[in-house]
Image 1 (cartoon, rainbow, N blue to C red):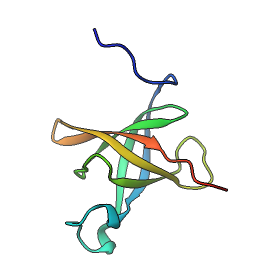
Image 2: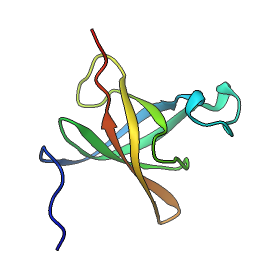
Image 3: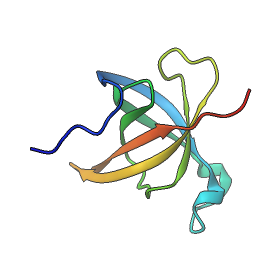
Length: 100
């Protein structure tokens, strides 16, 4: 069995959120008008989250999550992994700390 690589425990959830993708991280992206998406946070920790989404992403894509864990400001995040799951995509994101 593989060793757990996460620093913080994850909490299972089913929170529907809005998120957007930073178009500069995807050279093949459609116009900016289609950059808003809906996803479901399936698990959450202090440093990242797992999401179930309809939109395909690639590792290193930059996404901005709104309304996660009571955060007042959107959370900038980077996609770390992507897996296809039942016609949707599971993605793991790591929160990016930005200077205040």
